Length: 383
Image 1 (tube, one colour):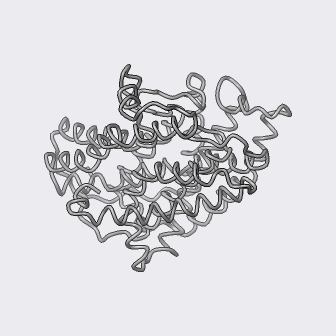
Image 2: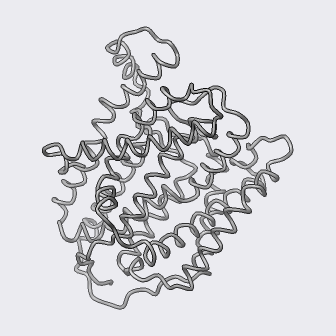
Image 3: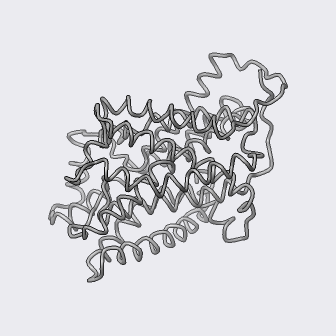
C-alpha cells in the first residue's frame, strides 16, 4: 500500500504547462483550418502546398504529446482530490465542472458552430430554428468536437471513483515511494506504447472516429496509458523532483526525434506523397510512425516536465490569471477561432501569414474572453 495523497502546495510549473498546452490546442486547430491534415469545423479551400506540409508537420508533432499530456496532468491530481473530498463531493464536483460545460456545448455551442459553417461556408439560407431541429433530428451524435476530451475525462474520473468504491476505499499505509523512472525505462515505455498503438491501428487507422462522441480511437492507447501513469505518479510524487540527468536526456532525445522524424516518415510514406501507409494497417511504415509518435511524445512530456519544474516554475500576475483561465479557453476557443478564420481567411496574403495572424488573435481573444466570462457571478464555481 502507498501513502495517502495529502494536499500539496500548488505546482505553478504545472499551471504554466497548461498554458502552453492550451496554446498548442489552438495552434493545432488553426493549422488544420489552414491546410494541415485533420478534421475541423472549417478549412480554407486554397491553402498552398508549402503551408500544407509545414502545418501538417506542426500538427503531427503536437499530436505526439499534447492531449496525452493533458490526461497525465489531470490524473496526477485525481487521487488527492478524491481523498480530500470523499466520493460524493468528488463526483458532485466532477459533474459540475465537466458535466455542465458538456451540456452547454451540446445544446448551445455545437449548434451555433454548425449553423455558422452552414450559412457562411455552404450558403445555407435556412433559419437557425430549422437548423437547430435538424442538428438533433435525426440523431447522428452529440457533436462534441473538442469536447471529446472533457467527456473522456468525466468518464475516467467517474471510473476512478467507482474503482475506489469496489476496493471499499481501503486506508492507505505510508511507505517508501517508487523510484523515479530513468531514461531507459521511459524509452521502453514509449516503445511499448508505440507497439500497442500500431496494434490498435491495424483495426482503427488514424482518421477512424467514433462519431457518437467524436472520439479518435487510434490515439486512445496513449491517453489511457498516460492517465494511469498519472495516477501512479501522484502516489509516488514523481512530478516533485525529476532527476536532472533523466530530464536532460529526454529533452535531447525529444529534440532529435522531433527534427529527424518528420523527413524520415515522409520519405517512408513513398514518393507518391500519400500518408496512408503511415496511418495504420499491416505496414512497416505504420509501425515506424506509431513508434516514432509515441516515443517522441513521451520524451517531449518528460523533457517539458523537467524543463518547467526547473526553469519555468514561477508566475507573475499575467501568467497566474492565464493559468486560471485555461479551462475556459479550452471550452470557448472553437467559436473564437472559427469566427476569426471566416473573417480573415480571405485576406490576400500567403497562407502561413494568415495562419500566424489568426492564431495570434485567437489565442489573445480566447484568453481575454475567458477572463471576462470567469468574472461573471457564479462562473468560477463551474469554470
